[in-house]
Image (cartoon, rainbow, N blue to C red; front, side):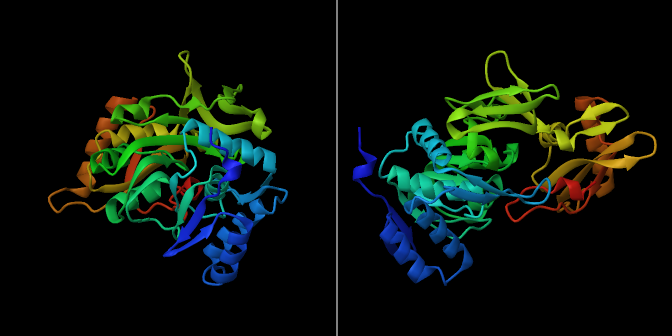
Length: 362
């Protein structure tokens, strides 16, 4: 077994390389931090870990379900999360990795600490919606929004791609599988409160989007009376009741259904927006670029299900007529109670990371 304490990784930005040590971090901060805020944030996370500061990690939540919150995690908890990742994906010393995530959030900070602990060769690029790099990496973590931009506009390949921060769509997975630019695609489930992923699933075919997430070793996930996930990760000092609705499967693992806070009560029928969105995606044309379901106040139902779509309608397609056709198709799949009362064209509010701000729709 390789003694990671006896070796050091490297951090690369542009054409410059620094040793993954406290001295390297200090030099990186001295020479690069003034160039841009995101570089200063990288330096701070890097230095914090090398100085053995407590807390080991300070992050903010994404703010998609409310006001962003500041969170602190101990070094022991951070290290437990990092070790889970290194072991589960067999990421040893010398792993060629990429940091494309913002380090103000937990996933970006975790990539830095993984690199330091695992003695990786980490390349740093500016966070963007269309990341790009040269050559092949062994391990890259992106949001689905970033992955869409990478495939459409970016360059570079990777052996393992870890997607997190939002659900993976059928269209995105199809693009990734067809691209031949990634060997293994994984989708993760986790939160800022759990120090990134606590469960994952491998996506080898489109059908795998219906496969269950499997908790990482040492993690147990069950449901409470509301059907929401309760996460136990003792090594990370985490016991957390979430607002994520899941379905536990008798064969093991679970299916993610959606956020409890997003459930639409339409005439007494509880509708998960994600269920409507997944149904639409099964027949959605490629020219629809974004879509989301939400509840809208209704005098009769309390809340009516609405599906909003974004896209460039072809000249030979009647924009109003096609919505009626799609509504009938959804009715056949979902039943009349869960079928959107309205399908409409319009913009969808998303964060810089591509997460839907569903509350702004209702």
